[in-house]
Image 1 (cartoon, one colour):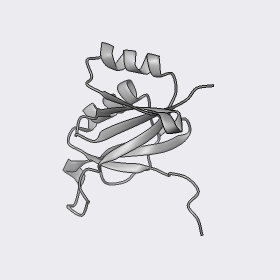
Image 2 (cartoon, rainbow, N blue to C red):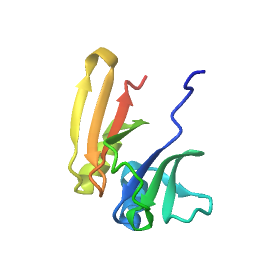
Image 3 (cartoon, rainbow, N blue to C red):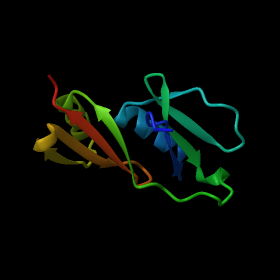
Length: 123
């Protein structure tokens, strides 16, 4: 048995609409189909994959594990991304990892979850 790929992360959110807007407008995911489950929420897609599941805290039964620490995405076009964040007034931090040819951008979503954007050397 082996792990083959990341499926998704679920985040408990205080304001579902604000979180959907953040993940669409800032991160660049898009809201898509979600099965009819009894807890209010949304699925955010990267291409054809629902990688972030948002669950409204108002529909939770108290059995969750809290808001998670961070979600990491592979991204491209660093300049355009940081411009969009700057133009939108979003606070973010950057870090280079030269040994891996990697540049990282970190920001917070509306519930304080860190979003890590990984920009691998573009060739």
